[in-house]
Amino acid sequence: MLKVGVLGAAGRMGHTVCVAVDGDPELQLVAAVDPAGEGQKDPAGEGQKQADIGSFVDAGVDVAVDFTTRDAAIEHLRWLAEHGIHAVVGTTGFNDADIEEIRGLFEGDRLLESGVAAPNCIIAPNFAISAVLMMRFAELAAPHFSSAEIIEFHHDKKIDAPSGTALATMRRMEAASQDWNADPTQSVALPGVRGGSGEHGVKVHAVRAEGLVAHQEVILGGAGQSLTIRQDSYDRVSFMPGVLLAVKAVSERPGLTIGLDSLLGI
Ligand code: NAD
View 1 (cartoon, rainbow, N blue to C red):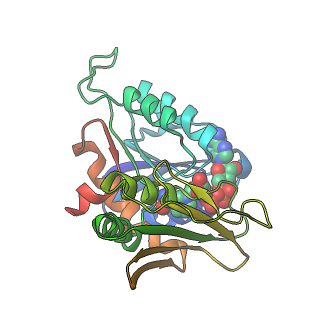
View 2: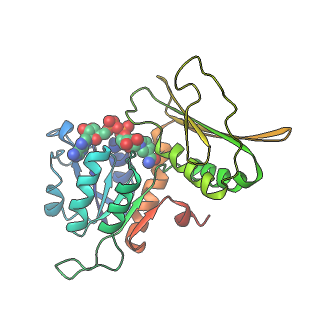
């Protein structure tokens, strides 16, 4: 059985991951770490949540799952790479320099001081299969349209903006096409009303409202037509099939893998 440790175990996503891992017959939840939940029972009801990632060594964790914050996740990944533990990361907010550092930490052909192969890492800005497909469809559609705006909708506790999914969608659409119409706006009555923009002009807007979970629309426009691609995660369980897939696959994916596309074969 694959031994799994969860970082951010007292958080909204981390707790859901603990429950999903505990319910999977191929996986064993052996450690649940979160300073906010120290001493609480872990969701498997067998141990207590720990405050520190150091507990992963005694627990013999094979794969760590991180749903924390950008700063905490970077520290965790440095530690996991050094200790030969595979990582599956759902935390968002990484910039390009962070991704390059993480790529270096999890280089596929590196040996640790102990002589064992360096561990692997999968980072997915969105583990919902519907969102993975939405990003792929947007990327495929991009070269066929001249305007694109992404609107992401999230719950009112989300601290980073835009969402990792919106950023990844924007980057993938701009990699697929750089030929976007210029913004026609010449004056704005409210600062920020036209949202943020990628290097090549794909716009991103972030909505925050109580009651939402995670949703996104990609609106593509062309002469006399538009295409709207919409994805909705109504519940955090929507992310779990993707998380469990990544946990089981990470040992077979050398180095850093970004997104679930290759795991899904799309
Ligand atoms: P949350 O605030 O409910 O949980 C984060 C938890 O991390 C908190 O309990 C906090 O105490 C804990 N934490 C902070 N520092 C820590 C540390 N050093 N060690 C261990 N735990 C630590 O947030 P959430 O809604 O669960 O989201 C967490 C992250 O996951 C965010 O970045 C969010 O954007 C992302 N997210 C990703 C996906 C995806 O599919 N990739 C889906 C939903 C959320």
